[in-house]
Image 1: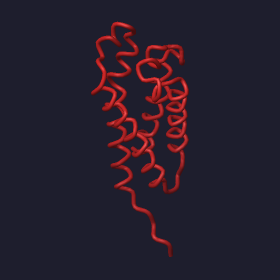
Image 2 (image 1 turned 120 degrees about the horizontal axis):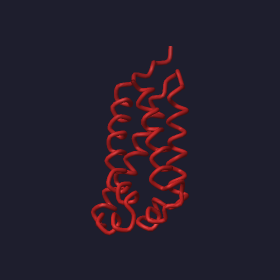
Image 3 (image 1 turned 90 degrees about the vertical axis):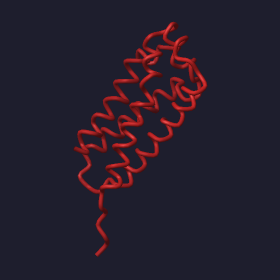
Length: 130
């Protein structure tokens, strides 16, 4: 289940960014939040997706790595809540439907994966040294 969750998170990060940003050409996403969602920021989301994908195939203890993933997702949820509370989606949808959809769902998506990563982190048991 953990492996499938990591692969799903990777797919959402990599595929979601590439589709909604139209492979980094959708300036409406960049303009709506130029700090978090610049092309550099979007590229870093893809890189996080690659880390999820790589982690899915690690067989050893990944508890603390998963904990870091939960914190990373928390940062994006907070950024999204801040953005959504200070901005309106209607003008963004009228400018670009993909950008509007992206900002409508990215925080909720990150919240779901944050809760998943937190659950995995809390349910993992590290072995005590002998």
